[in-house]
Amino acid sequence: MKTLIEMILATSLIASVCLAQNSGEASVKAMPQSVVKTVPVAGDAPVILIYSTIGYPPPVRPGESNPNISPRLVAALWNDGRMIWSESRIAGGPPHRQGRFTGERLVSLLGSLEAQGAFTNAALRRPWFGPDSKTTRIAINDGRRRLMLESWHELYEQNSNTVATAAGLEPLQGRNREAVLREQPEEYRQFRNTWSEIRRSVEALIPRHGEPYGGKIPIPDK
Image (cartoon, rainbow, N blue to C red; front, side, top):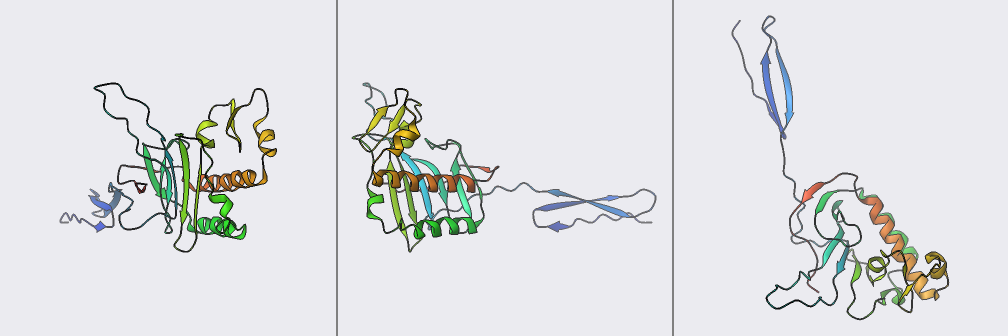
C-alpha cells in the first residue's frame, strides 16, 4: 500500500501524521502551538485601576540619575474580562502578569458599591495621606459610575507597628490595629471599609496562574 502523509492545520495546532507499519492506517497526534498573548490596552481604559505613587522623590547625589517616580500598577480590570496585575499586590510594579476573570463578578462588585451609595458619597472622595507621602489610588470608571479613592494606609501599614488613623500615622505600641480603627470617626471607618471591599473583591478575581505581561501599562500621567 502506498505511504500517505497528511498535514492537518487547525487553530493553534500542528497535526503530525504517523503511519502504522503493518495496517497502513494513520494515527494523528496534535501538538499545541506556542502563542504569545498580549492584552490590548490602547484605546480603551480599564474599569478598575489600582496603582501606587511614590510621592515626593527622594534626594539624589550629584552625578546620579533621577529615581523612577512613575506610578506602579497593582491591578487593571476591563469589562470584557481582561486583567493585568502585579506580583507585588501592595507596592505594585513589575513583574506583571495577564489573564482573564469572570465578568459577572465585576458586575456584582460594582452593583454592591452602587447599592451602598459609594458612587454618590462625596466623603469617600476625600484623600487620606500626609504631605509628600506614598499613596495608593483606586480608580473606578465604567462610563456611568465613577469613584476615586486615595490613601497611604496600605503602604505604610506594611510596618506591623504602624496604623494609619484619621489623624495620621501612629505607632501601635502594643495596641491592636483593628481595635484602633474601630475607634476612628465614622467617615474614616466607612472609607476603610469601602476600600477593603474593593481590594478583597479584586484580589479574588486574580487568576491563580497568568502569563507574563510586558506591554503598555494603562496608568494616566496624572
